[in-house]
Image 1 (tube, rainbow, N blue to C red):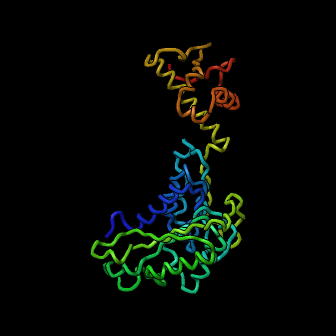
Image 2 (cartoon, rainbow, N blue to C red):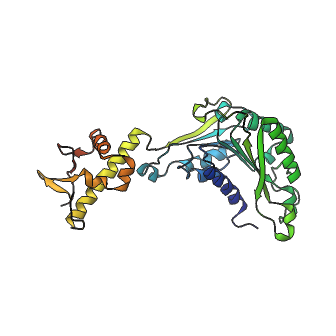
Length: 330
């Protein structure tokens, strides 16, 4: 009925929220096969911490290595650090490692909880985790008559499905109790002839009300006590001095060899050309400094020279003004 499919629309809603609200830390409750986290890990210019939580440890283990860094992440490290953590646990349990997030997402989760647990869920989510923002999505029961083959609930594991009025009543009660404000929207529009039933998936976007205190810094989170850590990986980042040094050296060596090849082909005559000194090829640092990637890694030419002097893979001329290439084709 929907294009793109409804699950993609839900994930895209979260992705757009993260991009437009400068969200640095996200906890996805009910992460299951990690589909949402796999999308969010591409927002490395914004996000620095992604955490997933699910009661089904086997589902997490089957998919967890899909969150491993790509080979390109080591060749071209990101500007920001990114850590990914996956836990086995329940949202009705309190664990200090869940506090202080910019955003907690509960995508199609609440309807899987037994009704007596919903109040506990609210207290843990809004009262204990106390993130800056929360996104909750859940089926809109009023839309069900439009779905082929749906006679009761949309999934056999659903314990209930709320109408818009029921969902909004729960959301507003949570806001009054825990100090949040909520906006209602959704994805999956009804046909024009049935627009009165609302969206197929209803969404509540909760923001912590001003004056009620900010969440704790996620960088100072405590170690998990109730949850079990299943997977953790840290993506390479230019903020790591070792990663920065390797990336810079690789770029310098590549730029130097390209400059020598261009000189051999007489493609770029002019000042700052490579030259030979005592049988070795030398490429002036000023020529290498013209590479945009290198200029992005080092702010000044003296900074580039100091960084190369600290390394072992690059040899400079005695005056420190040129890179020496020993093994290049002639």
